[in-house]
Length: 126
Image (tube, rainbow, N blue to C red; front, side):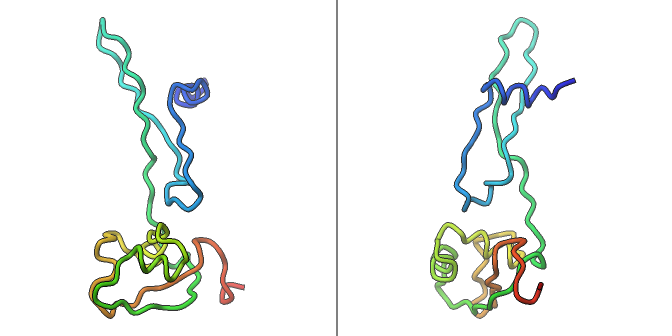
């Protein structure tokens, strides 16, 4: 029996989302919730949403160097300076096991691991 969700996606009933490769959701994928209609009711359109993204273990990242945070550091500015793109702040969060990104730079003096992208082997992994 074919998967009904895949049939909806193939028919274009559920919008697909194209994200830039720098997005943390680029590899997650989209699924949809289809609510069965009540008797006599028109079927509701499917509601697309991103699948759950689980944060990877910090051990999956090859360390390049560490950065000591200072008062006033912002995650977007750190990502811009350390990784070359302010939208990659989530890579710093993932590499450091940070669940609440608002607290990524706290307290001042915290040592943040600056790493290669997840799964890219470093010199120590060779």
